[in-house]
Every structure is written in structure tokens, then in C-alpha cells.
Length: 357
Image 1: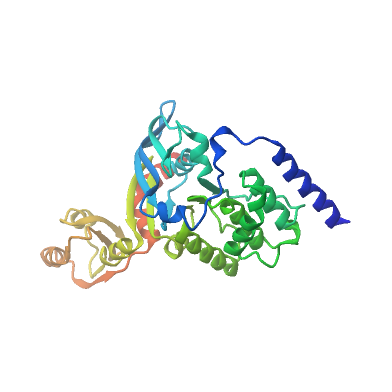
Image 2: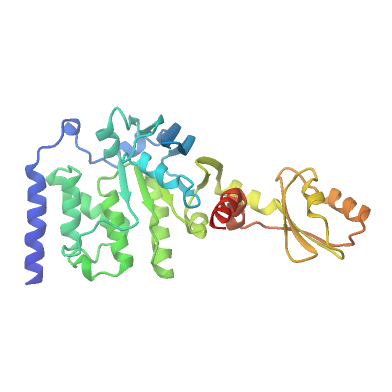
């Protein structure tokens, strides 16, 4: 009885979509041949964000943001609450117009060619847009119809999406009976069923157990081979595990944009742990050339964040001798992504703390 009901619902959904005429821009179908278009766009920027700003009255949410994403690249997009991350995602996905600047998706300007640009996007929101009463196959057929994929091509599109997302064995099962990890996979499948050049993922692993998180991260890396992927997340280890590049936004401006390899070099060379017999003067350490900031780590130990291109070790040794602090330890340390994130957004955190006080 249940299966009969779901079949009827699925048929009604796809039939209703088929009766709606395709929009004029879509005379050439959205379905992209992975053998042709992926090769054509391999050397192109899939997302170009140029000088984008956004204001809400007197509040400047974004300030002259510019970046690009190419095929085969997974970009991790990070930022504290209120920094402008969500606004940026809304503008890239075409749900919000910028106050200044422009965005193009696979060569289509979002303002002048909104339908063509949005057809090049796949989007997985934090809560996957799934119908629990449908089977996986019925739901993906419905999504294929929504994306104007020819009826003759829908089975191939569905099977390709299922293979990409590891859903080959659950096509006949009700989505409502699947685990959360598999429901997340179904959400990923709907985002890529029309093979869009660009895929936007918003917190794709939230609420999953460690095994499911590992599986979704593997899927993201696989998607990154054929698509340009924007991964918006608060889970910092996820960025290191899944992304090729990371961007941190703070107070509406990009404060960091680097490859994971470049970030790793930065993380290995920019922190010194220094210990003294007497409590040091943090302001004097802070004033040394090449020192970005100093944080107390107990009464007689400090963490010294340095410019990656500078080495203030000799200056610290000399200062400790002159002030008779009794230097007992100076050790280079690796910096975690969490420490870098806090360092680049510390002004935001202080402002928030002051507001709460």
C-alpha cells in the first residue's frame, strides 16, 4: 500500500512538471554532457565575484569582495556569525542582489542572465529539500524534471547522480526510511543531477556521525574533480580534509585567501612558544619587528604569532636578556586552523564580547 502510494505521488510530480513549458532560455537543455562541456570549461573560471558589496541601510554587510573558483577546485568559505558569509552565499546563488559589483556563473552574469546563470548551479542547503514519502528514484526523477532534463535522458541522469553519491542500492527505498547520512547523500544527488558546473554546499555534514562525515567528505572530494565546489561550513577540520583553498571573511571583507598547501606552510612557521623565569612585559614583545600578536599562556609563558616571512627569535632572546626575564624556552609551534581563524577574526570576537558586556 505504501509503495503504491509513493509511485502515484512521484508520477503526479513528474507529470505536472512535464506539462509546464520550458522557459525560452532553455531551448538548449540544461543537461550537460560530462565528456564535452567539462573539457570545454576546464580552463575557465566557473565563478567570478567582482567587487561585490551589499548594504542593509547603514550597515555594510559586504565590502568589495572579489574571488574566483575554477573547475576541479573545492573552496572552503569560513567566517564568524554576522561576518557576511551567508550574504555572500545568497548573492552567489542568485537569491540576493548585490548593492555593487557583479557575479558570473560559467560565463553568465547573474543580473543580466539570471536563468542561464542559475541553471549552472547546484545547491544543497543545510536542511536538504527532500520528500520523505517518495522513493529515492522517484525523487531524483522529479528533480530531473524540475531541471528540464529531457525525459529520455532522465534515467541516465538519475543513475549518474546515484553513482556519484553512493545511492545505487537504495533507489527503491523510501527516503523517510533512510538514515540521516543517506538522506544527505540524496540531497547531494539532487544538487548534481543536472551536472551543474558549480555546486554550493551549506554545512553538508552537520548532525552526522563520524563515519557518515568521512563518507560525505569523500563525496565532496569526488565532486571537486568535475565541478567547482563552494563549501560553507563552521567545522574547521572539514576544510582541511575536503578543500583545496580556504577563504575567511570578517566584517564583510576577505581577511584570508590561500591554498591549503600555502595555509599549511603558514601554520608551520608563524607561532613561537616562549617561556621565562619572570613574567614578561607583553607590550614590549608585541612591539618587536615581525610580531603580529602575543597571547599569555599562563603567568610566565606566551604564544607569539609572527609574520611568516619574519623570525623574531634573536630579538626575543636579546630583549629577555636586557630585561632579565630569564629565558628558559623558545620553541616554534605549528598553528592550527582554529588558531588562525581566531587570530584573523579576533576583532569580531572582541566586539561581540563587548556588546554582551
